[in-house]
Amino acid sequence: MNNRGNYKTKQYDELLDYLSTIEGKHFNVCDIHDHFQSVGKNIGTTTIYRQLDRMVDEGLVSKYVLEPGSPACFEYMSPDKHIHGGICFHLRCEVCGRLIHMQCDELSSISTHIMKEHGFRVDPMRTVFYGICQECMEDDVEGKKLCH
Image (cartoon, rainbow, N blue to C red; front, side):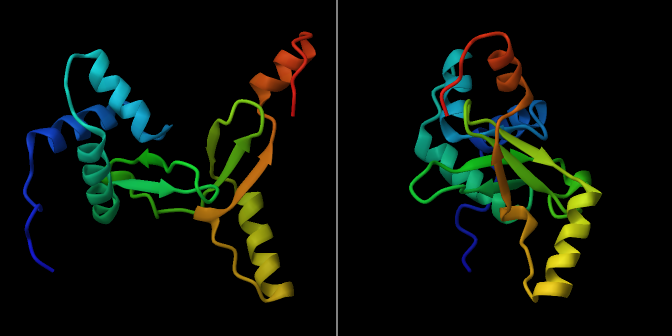
């Protein structure tokens, strides 16, 4: 592999600085682009994609593609909280689309059961449970009828 593009750039550093402020939260390229536009920095989406892909390769960022054709979702974790350090699953709200990162020992035991009893290894980094988040359920209870 050639080392072209493996040096640190101003955009890489700016992106890393911003991601450290939203550690553990999910975001997409549009979110990042909008942030930089709002603070008067013109960093293009191609540059953001390229730098995020590099950070994925470095293990600083996790990349999730929930459905074919949907935009990728990312999550930054600081180097001391490496992304693959534990088992995590995701919850996807079918109303607002929010993706919730979840580490749960109960689900780890389900993965063990599925492997032992059904001979199938679950990939927790790609496992998404669909439903309705608490905020959307509260909106529904308050009479803001939700469509789903």
